Image 1 (cartoon, rainbow, N blue to C red):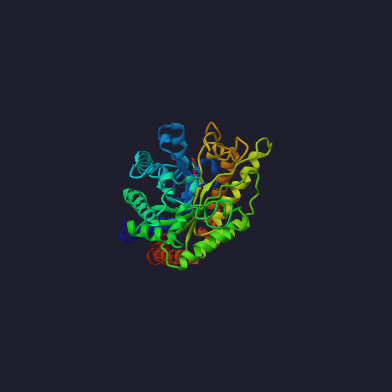
Image 2 (cartoon, protein in one colour; image 1 turned 90 degrees about the horizontal axis):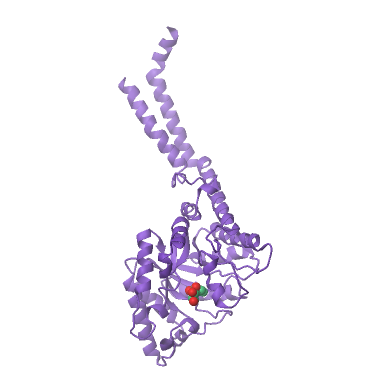
Length: 403
Ligand code: XIL
């Protein structure tokens, strides 16, 4: 073959696919998942292609439940240990360290390629603080115990966990003032001090603060925002804000308001995440599951609309095992999750999957057509190819035609 012709064919063979790939760079992540046919995708795959983590919870005893792990590994890209990394699990009495459950959950997640949200070194609610900690009356002793606990837990997992809910629920559960917690006896700046300690323990880890009810308890979002703003202004090393988003049975979310609340945190240059989503239904409501599907859709849509919203974690997988049925607040069964008692997908699952698929398809379209840099690049290459063809072959083609 003529060497000029060969060069030309080679350059076409290299340039055209390169350009096409560049134009549809998000289109190739999974050969099987086509967002135009949402049933070919899982929610985790779609979320991954949209650049967000989609998580669920994991307990150590669920690792041996193959129904649970099958759905977890198929549908989710991240986990939060539901109880395995809490103080009451890891140090139920002073100096009694229990890491069996934590190690099992963390190692399973690492081996399975799931991201981990380390939850939670300090949970600022007396109701969930071990008795021996609450009974410490000397603030110096309490500080020692806190530093020792955070240090032990964070250093143990530093090589496997790179995102921590360092402090959980600093505010009153159903109010706007500081939480009912012994940790507040450590002084105004105790949260800042725990974050500073966490940064020195693992300088590479993302450090998050996490709160309950800021989506619905009156005034709580403003109180939480004020607290986080103060921490940021004081130079506390904090990277992200978790809004738990445990919804109330039958409650209707104001999607725009929720989106604005998420943006309030990203405006502080912090990441934000929906960290513990569940949507209980009102038992007996004939439209329970369609209403629930719509509520889930709104939460996910709000997160997708905010550039710094990087994760949505659902607080469990199957309705048969939700913490809400054990909590005693709501009429049961609360059926708040994406999968029913038999791990079958509910309408809420479908609504989320379809929304993620539509969003992904929409985001790809503008990229394929309207990026001016890519369009100019394409034009230059086409002109160059055309010019080259013309220069090298026009005489030959004219002669062929003349013959
Ligand atoms: C809950 C667990 O789901 C329950 O199993 C446990 O008994 C109590 O804690 N906010 C949080 C989570 O930050 O850690 C809580 O998890 C739910 C509320």
